[in-house]
Image (cartoon, each protein chain N blue to C red):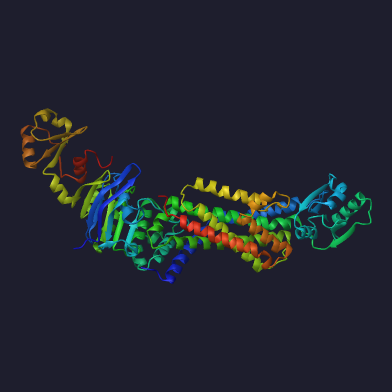
Length: 346
Length: 294
């Protein structure tokens, strides 16, 4: 006896409403999920609002003659050298005041600075002093709004918050349902695993989108951060990012009824993402293999896409590769979760 | 009449443990069928196999003469011994949720009244007492107006008043013509509620029939009990079998009149005399050598 499509919809809706009410009534969890990221961002803003650091950051595009010429500058203890393999990326850093000066191996004698950056102009003076005011060196000026660390970190903090909310929020709920017999009770009703999982995913997605919106607006009120791109593209990235992490949590929660095991597995998944998905720091200087590992995490794609949209004004096409990866990850994770899912442990 | 449910040679093996061993029975529509046995006898595993929670190792299960399908799921109501419902919802919200999961549904206000849940509707499920929670679970088992209702140890852990309330509710659904499969380890519950029962022990059936038939089949005597101290003088010479307990003795009497005459003749003090019929507990003890509550 096959159910008509409308019956599937009614059942999913009933379970969706139920789960959403449960979350809404858990006031402590609700407040915490919104207040924590705002507190983190406020703390970061406060920590970085003091005096500017004296360190100069000089980017070097590839290795070669230019680095040899500028070696006296790069060897200074107050200069941090950052190597780049992508010139456009390095130039973007100069535009955003994240690099004070850029050198390119394939264009000796040229350097790039942002003329509106005081540190950029100071770095230029240092460079010229170290090359004895060699007239063959020429300035290439770039312009762009300064991107503070807090602007850079906001997409990461938002991503981190949604990651924890998505992974732990849905993972623990399903494990708890299995442990206390809720799933056993539902199993003997006409509810199918797909209906149940769909309702859980949709409810969590809604909750996480509302939470992320509140956190976004809250942080913006405090810090007035940079947002140059399209909100629609950002929302799409957020939906796919959250969806992929929810489906990842479904895999973890597919069979166990042990909250301890689920906690261990969720930490096992979330901590590498927290460290390697460019939430807190860029992997510009990291070894290639580490960058490759980070590309396996949905959070990396979510954070990189969101950051690109927010501080570089990237459009849909510019982040479409991240969107595609998130969509594929979501589909694969969901298929695995649906295959592995059991109402009970036996 | 064709049975509504039939189980043939059902077996469940967990590693080294045979939880259910070659159980077969039929349940007639409109009757209350009992699975009576001690904890660990295999009652819950049997129910879980019938309702589809656990795959049998071997054996067949037929509902309305056919292997179970989606129709069975729509027409069966189940109350488990240990399940729960969502934490932060009220009784009304839980009832509404489960009501919406079925195509065929019972009338909700009538169900609320029948299960005495009216005053609890706005109560969170976590705040319910044991008896109130069982009434809610009982209501959920009836929410789809089922043809057959499975009740797994429905009164375990309840106070006497709550047990009586639940018995009344079970009697009411029996009166509506629904079939009930009840597991219990309370022999009084089985005797009062069940039309037919099987007694199970260590995964297998050891007796099957109506409570009256079973008692008639296995017992041809009554029990006459006295304080041990009053019976001490005739203990060694009494002609009928005597069961010795701590402070009492029980005479297995084929004729109460004859036993009483003999007691009077022997000038035994009758101040503590009691006469009772055999019970299912006695039957279980007779068949297995151990008590139902062990």
